[in-house]
Image (tube, rainbow, N blue to C red; front, side):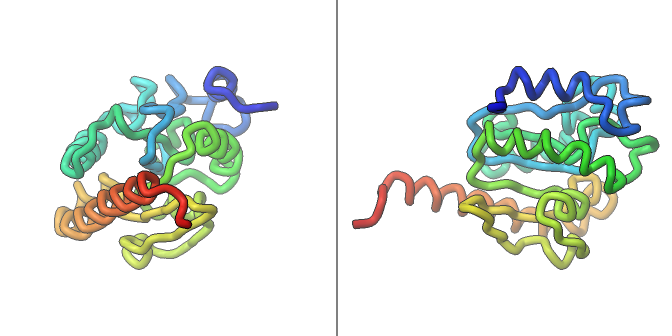
Length: 194
């Protein structure tokens, strides 16, 4: 069956594929521009996100909005999602089976949005999206290309709130994202090489 936003949202809203659905207030499918060139993926909703049904709306979300704005974009121009669509209890990391249950939804979002650049916010997103199980401090700032899509792992905004000394590195990563988007736009405008 061909993916559509309507069927995807219906599936997420009615999902009972793992135990995370048992205590959710609202699932958090994601939000933003359905044709965004830039997508952000975090690990999972927190308390504020569960209450509102929107991703990154608490303190981490405010910081993410500021960082997006700093690279010349607005939240409405990007797409923001998480590996899991329901809040893990006590904001713990998603378990492998929970992430596996939600990955088909994230893959459908990739297909529908077709982003050119994806920023992986934290080690959980890195692990489940790219299959790399290493510290984010070792992976951040290094581009990974898969099937013409460029992935930039960086720190999760909550890590930056806990340790502001990491903000400088995260800012370097965001500037690299801005440069990559500009480079891809230039290449698109130039068209295929003769």
